[in-house]
Image (cartoon, rainbow, N blue to C red):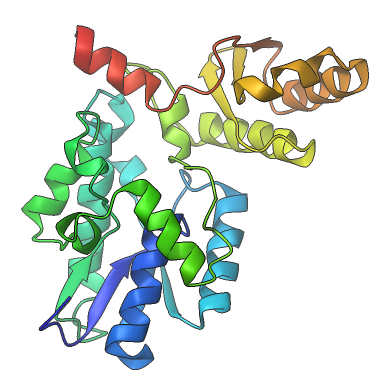
Length: 261
């Protein structure tokens, strides 16, 4: 960030963007760093609330704004490059509506060094197209090092699991709609209420396919937990509810398409 006067940080409340915003606030001064939180149907309600709380705990400035990726037919089509269209909308909205208003010299986002070598990150192309900075990746900070830095900074999200947008729960080639996103949001909120540390609810039409950490699969053997989760996920709009015995599979849909076509 050397040489940057006023920096906007594309901020989601996850550990990467939180570390970047915390460091920017300390290095540049609170008046010269601002978190930019995009709000849309693809942002889980719990994640939205946590992002606000985390920014408050860091005493960081936060600007919330709406994005409308759902208006783009290419995004709704949900091909393997969906994330490109989402990030392109994000960075376009920042450039059009925020950079001038907040007199920003640059915009950065929280790609780390591990992300930089993954093949399932089409959103990175949008960052390149918009000349968005990648301070964590450029500094060689891997995910474990980012988490270590978060702990050193006293950030409550240091060990927070990754939380991809809700659209990642819909198989590629199946349309992304507000209704589907709401169903996933409500179902995953139910799992968090029942104490699951991480979860994905994959949307297969009438079927919800639940993914939780392998170490937590055995919790479904408890009739009380099973019945409660079943009732709440059904209430979210899924007549049929299944449990994936493979556990959490980050980026499963995108990786499958990129590897096998």
